[in-house]
Length: 117
Length: 114
Image (spheres, chains in turn brown, red):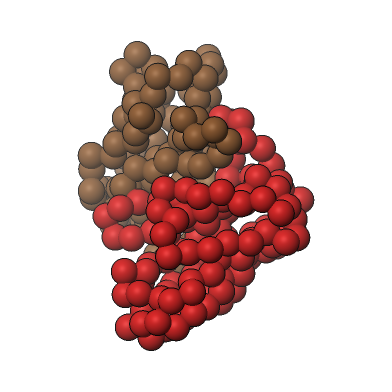
């Protein structure tokens, strides 16, 4: 069965510092994708970044990058130059390909990031 | 372009009452989903739809019903609300089911069942 594990319930960082949020996954599929979502205190789920299993380079989107280590089955989110607005819950997710329709996302339990000035 | 919208944003129900949550998307997506988010549990799939007129059960379907009469709308119904259904409900949509397809979420509905 597919599974996403986020082992850091909370992370604390100061402004302008970089922070890494951990995500490990378990799947027997060769083709899969990892997603990161941000959930600020207002509650909405905001898509941040995507990494495909066959992508040769790590994904980057502005200050967000993904440290993808396929052999270790990890897809850690790196936020460079943290800002106060980065304070939020962050979720790692992947498609549930065991479902016949292959549609649902499986989520980790999330990591709360707190950025201080 | 509003993306995915949900109504209402917040609702309080008494045990046994019924209600319907409405999700609408303007991206012409075929696939729509309802999730619930509980503290410490992440998001879990309740029901989903792969097209107009079709629905299927997800991980936690008990106590909920859904309908997809129009492509752009996905309704989640609670026939007899229970305190265990206190949660935040998210609707999402995607254009496909391939592993790289992104799901886009609505703003969520907070439901409190007393």
